[in-house]
Image 1 (cartoon, rainbow, N blue to C red):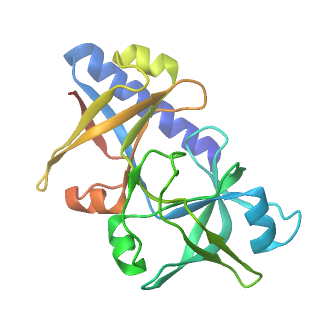
Image 2 (image 1 turned 180 degrees about the horizontal axis):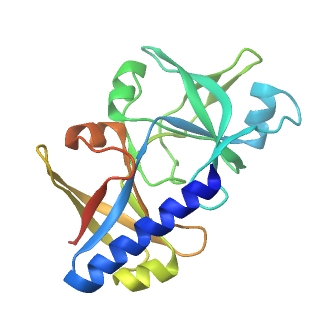
Amino acid sequence: MFEKQEIAVKVREATVVEIYKKTGKRYVPVAISNRHVHLSREDLDVLFGKGYELTQLRPLLQPGQYASKETVSLSGPKGKIDGVRVLGPVRKNTQVEISVTDSFKLGIAPVVRMSGNTSASPGGRIETARGSADMKEGVIVAARHLHMSAKQAETMRVSDGQVVSLRAGGGRGIVLEHVVVRSGDGHEMEAHIDTDEANAALLKDGDIVELVLE
């Protein structure tokens, strides 16, 4: 499966680079990010047992990252969502990424942040059959962002930290503004948006959108 994914990625990248060189228009593929959890070592031990190791279900496009077979439940003041996927590997701090729609169901204020920036964000409770972990902070709505390797960013003439827009065509075409470029080692060309944003524009994984400089 991973070999097929690698081939698809290379074909897709070659296509958008060729279009840019011929037309001057930049296009990038999108990935739709559903709600998920990144766990710290400490919380992984609490939720699944001391020394537990995540079981890889499938690799993600971003190097070294993967979806695991493990899922958890997420609770807030108003409700609970089961079957929230855990992504690996473990991180220094636990982080939960939800959509605005999810925030309404949970009763957790939607705070838009870049991944890793969880200071003073809302908390919540993560549960499994084995245990529970109460988070003082770490529940965010992920800010739109665009991953690129250093070489890809150079080719497309954008830089790490630059803010761009994404234009989606079709019957429900929209422009998604304030998309932050994240480039360098450990990144691969892919724009990340959440399920609310994708549904608004009828986008699905792998669709191509235009990158527009703000």
